[in-house]
Image (cartoon, rainbow, N blue to C red):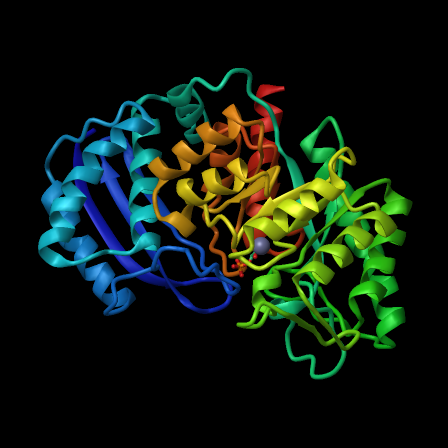
Length: 406
Ligand code: PGA
Ligand code: ZN
């Protein structure tokens, strides 16, 4: 692929924070990629940008892109990103790190251009590169009601848990998406009634912002799920409220749980509400707490997923799987800042039958590449939210691919 021009710049994400966008011009067209950003980040995620900030990263990438300009870059498979990796490694050695968000964006825009070169869609390029068998559609994991760090402007009572999720089980992705949209609209009535307010706000991910306790919110979620025949789940995001001594100080209701009590509480919630999916039920360092919970719920088919625990980092995913801490994992390419690393994590998960949930971040852009990566890498689920342009653009992309191939 012949590179005519490349340019990185700063844009704003859905939260009006600065993020990076790269455009790349080749003989086949102009391609654009950008990076999302998290609010409840895992401690083990790579740094987003150079230590001097995003503007410095942009400057570095532009310097690096200049080196690629008017040259041929041979990227025929995703594995060929190694070529880029090598020259980036040398470049960073002399000029400093560009950061995970910058690297992911650079790799992503190059893959978009490389796919076009091969007359393939991005998902197809990835799928063919890794030879991952028949194409399958992931199921959506939709963020219906929010709490925790994602709550906006609620002073008093609010859920400690971050995301209350709806997970359809349908043959078609498009049917599943429609169900989630209707279900979230129905949830609005119930949340409004319980909050005793006329107008409800949505949080960054388009989930209802609620002033109810964890269990009041779960009661609502269950009622919605029963009406629409959906499975339900939680992103506890427990590292965001676990304290430095490893205790879980709950605000709603006020209770101080130690790690074993937290395991017990999670197990009880799984039983009481028939939870299909629980993400980060324990602190991001507590591999053995995860293990205890998984052992207690095995046989129920509940998915116990790592996000802050694993941070799309192969070493941490391997450790969690070998320790029997998880049976599912969140994959966010910018947590590790490399699609080559994502490929290794995917390979490991497939070999070990670990369910993969490709995920957006709370601060998003209009880039829909995560949809292609979810299909290309053979994800079981995609977590994108249910509402808002940055979320819908990803859901629509999967619906479009589904329409074309099934
Ligand atoms: P983040 O959270 O994108 O704000 O980090 C999402 C999640 O924890 O899954
Ligand atoms: Zn999470």
